[in-house]
Amino acid sequence: MTSTPQSATPHPADSARSVRNSIVALVVTAAVAFTIVGAVAVFTARRIAREDSLAEAVQRATVLGSAAFSVDLPAALHGDVAARDRLDLVAERVRQAGSVVRVKVWTEAGKIVYCDDHSQIGLRFPENTDARAIAAGHHAMADVSDLKDPENRSEAGEFDWLLEVYVPLKLSDGTKVAFELYTTGVRLRDTQNRITGEIVPAALAGLALLVLLQLPVAVWLVRRVGRAQQERARLLANSLAASLRERREIARDLHDGVIQDLAGVGYVLGAAERRISTEEGPAEVRPMLSSSGDAVHRAVRDLRSLAIAIRPPELTSEGVARALDELAERLTTAHGFDARMAVMLPHDVSPDILATVYRCARESLTNVVKHAAASEVVLVAGADDSTVSLTVTDDGRGLPPGGLPDPSDGHVGLALLGDAARDLGGVLTVGPGELGGTRVSLVLPRRDGKHR
Image (cartoon, rainbow, N blue to C red; front, side, top):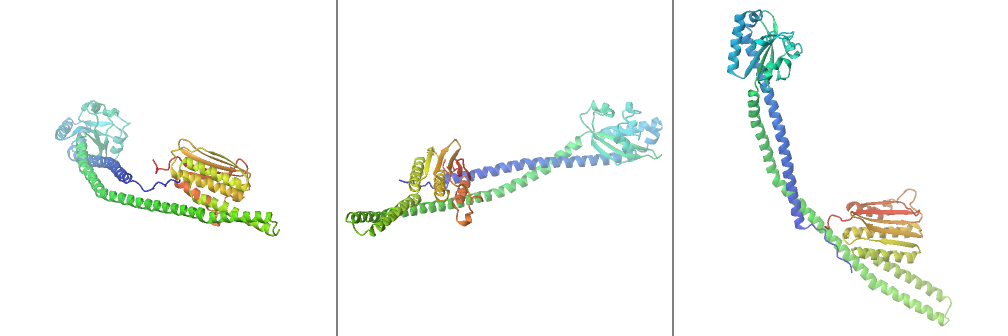
């Protein structure tokens, strides 16, 4: 009794699970996108805020240096105490009005010629290349100050970090100096917070809107693809079931009709031959009856083999093992080679895997009969924790010099089996065998993913 093949149609629960998995994947992707977009938006906002704050600091230092300090600087640099006092007064007012914490004036030699902290006046820091370059007439610059530098020791004790701005000044007497302002990061932080608060929500809101608009479309597409897969699987299952019914009907018709009729004819011919022999009939009739009887018996045997071949075995490990034993016995009896079998297939192997194993064994043994002229064949089928394997080895003439025959010439059996193995996640290989002939090896996953 053959088992009915399990339907390949996905269960509705599987379709619902596929939809849920797709939605979860979309949500996870959206979360990743939110994170990336948010991080990029924050980075961009902070960069824009930094550039704006530094540009504003440069502009502010330029205005203060040109308008408020350049007037009294020439006299103060020549030792005019009153001019220096006026500079101190301006610096104090600037500090009180905003975020400025220090004012310095540098020469091209790296010497501080004015500072609102008088203890730094006259100090030299030749390693301060920024101040020297700006004093030489280079473009203004602004950056976060490294308070570990020697010229920043007095500021390092009061602040964690500051913005330092250098702008070139050319005084009325022609002296070139670098005017430096140290400011706190209040403006920078405020600008960063403001721009971040404007850019990040807008970017995330746009992404959220895009996700919300795409989610219904994605769910609809997933469900539509799922329905299409179900329909294809249903059609395939119906086609396989119809093919199985047709094969069974053909096998039954052969067994109950032609085979029985030919067997009856064979018995009649045998009886006629014996009767003629007993009654000493015409000598020329006896060989004709004998050869006709042999032909009928061969036809009956071949038709029975065909009926068994087109009627698939029971798709269980025991059914496949029994069918392989019968197939090997039938072929060895008919063609005279020795077949050694070792079939140990576990119970939980899926029907599709078992069917492919049987098809491969049948095709391999048939090829041995047709092409190998072998005297010995070894068939081994078994399984481990993850795979099912089949090897068929013979001592025949082996593969032709060019390898396997071209499928376009009609030799499609092994090619179709290779495609079937790949569809199930396995591999079929054909090559030289240990016995000197050909070795066919089939390796498949223990379960095909549809029978769990």
